[in-house]
Structures are given as C-alpha cells and as structure tokens.
Image 1 (tube, rainbow, N blue to C red):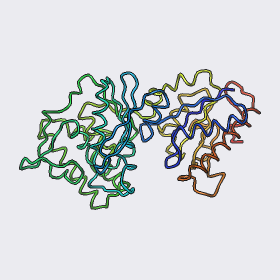
Image 2 (image 1 turned 90 degrees about the vertical axis):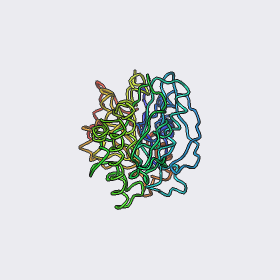
Image 3 (image 1 turned 90 degrees about the horizontal axis):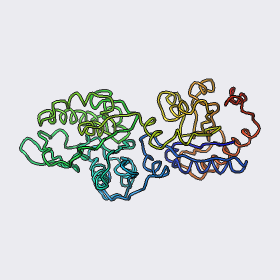
Image 4 (image 1 turned 180 degrees about the vertical axis):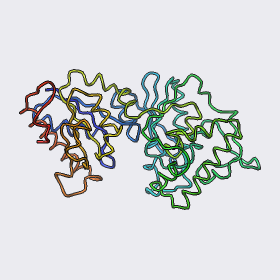
Length: 385
C-alpha cells in the first residue's frame, strides 16, 4: 500500500509541511508506506510548499504591512520565482496583530519582487492570499519604479489613505519586466470596485469600518481614473476583470504589468508536480483547516480529488461542515475532522492538532490495511463507514 499525503495548511495552527508529517507519523505506526507533498493554492504558505517541493528559499528583509522591516522569504527554482504577500507584508506582519486599514501598503511585495529579479527569472509567480492592505497595489508598483502625484505634482506616500489624492502616475523609470511571465495564482474573482469589489468584500477582515470601506472604494476608483489619465487607457477594463480585486487590488496592479490570472489550485498542483507524485499511488490523503460546501467549487481539495482520479482520496480537516452525502460529489471517499475527536478549539492549538492528526493517520492506516482495493475503490468507505 502506497499513500501520498498532500495537504494544505491548517490556517492558524499548522503549516502544510507539519500537517503532512503528523499524518505520516500516524501511518508509520501501521507500517504504511507514504510520501508527502505539502500543497498550497496561491495563498499564505505558498512559498513554504514550493520549498518543500524542491525550490530554494531566499530570505529577504523588506517593508512589512505598516512599513516596519520584516524578514520574509521567496522561493526560486531554475527560472521560476515564487513570491507571496502573506509572509512579506500580509496580516501576519502587522505589529501586535493590530489592523491599519488605511495605512498599510503592498510596498514590501514590490521590494521582494525586486530581490527575485536579481536571479533573472523568466517566470514570476505571485501568491496573493493573506494581504493586509487595500492600496490598489500602488505600494508594489512604487517599489518597481512608479511614482504617484497629487494635482499639485507632489509625490505621495503609497497606502490606502492617499488613494483619493492621486492625480497623475509616472511610469517612466520603472523596472524592466520584458521577457518575464507574471502569473497571479489564486481563486479570488472579485473586480476592483463596487459592491463586489475588494474594499466592500474584504475590507472588514482588514480592519476597515463602513466609512473606511466607502473611502477606499472611492479612492480606488480615483486610482483607475488616474491611470487612464496617465497613459493606461485600458485601466478601467482591467479594474472590471475577475481577480482585479484580489489582495486589496494587487491583482489590478499586477494585470497592469501584464500578469495573467490563473486558478491557484490548478497552477500550484502543476508547479509542485502533483501528477508525478501520484505515480504508483494507491491512496491520497489530503486536508485543510476547514471543509464545507464551498470546497467542491474549485477549491484546492476538490481540484486535487478530480486530478487524482481514479485514485481514491481521503480528506482531513480541522472542522468539517460538508454533509456525508456530499463527500463523493466533492471527490472524497471519507472525511475526518479534528473537531470530531475533541471539544476543544484546535484552530490555534498546534500541539492538540498534531496529536489528533497522528491519531487520524493511525486510523487511516488501520482501516486501509483491512481493506481490499477493487478497481481502485474501497467500497466500505462509500457510505462513510
């Protein structure tokens, strides 16, 4: 019996690497042969997953979300560089975890891209989950040589607070990105502006009040007008495109640079060479912090299950809100949840989560050993037994 353990992170508790190792430890107690492939979908943890898959980590010191120095890292392999917002200038870089909806910036992301460019990549993968700012990506652009000016020609600080003041944008001294494929990997399809835009949908989780959200949305609309005024006639069209609202508008800025938007789940499965890892595997064990009705709609675990067919897939989660009769439709023969084993909250308790994952790994190993595979399907799992 050969098992591939390929989970995403359990957000707030364990990294994908840690989840995989705990499950592997549980399977080892049943002498089950397994290998691990920690995954990501373009959100936080993408660099860690890339490193686990063989990319080389490169530490970088850049501006965190509020401008204070932050030590993050990027990942490189051959001509591909992976840069993520979360560990560079995301919510986790906020001092004391205090949000600053109007004064945070994506400047550090642009600085990290600058570090990546020193290695002469031909492909730049941007993972935009976990952002702390709603600045329309002007921080990132500023680090790449753009400058933003008010109606009097004064150069502005780059953050959400200054968005309404931007009148003209100078891109005459920007970094040369010719010959570099820029990929934004994620599953956010929101446009930049309006009731389904980045401020309205994601502002609250970044600490924005209702008044802040209205201020930021109006400021982003002004930013688009300033780009049109400054020689970017398609800026309005880009602002309306799916994904422009990702990461507080970094998606919009990236598309202005020529980036293409792709499914984070599909792209990272390819980038991390999931199909090769699947070779000669009898069972896949995957997982993430929460499984619910949305999981089946293009999320990483369901995309993985579809790619794995006909190899059966077991899912493990911190909590599971997906009814048993929906498991098969999502691609799972069984779903385990840590919350079924304890009344305590495992979301922020890494030790408890680890112990329960090892226990679940042991149980998966015990059941697997007692089953006989028939055409790649274990019938006893079909009813969740």
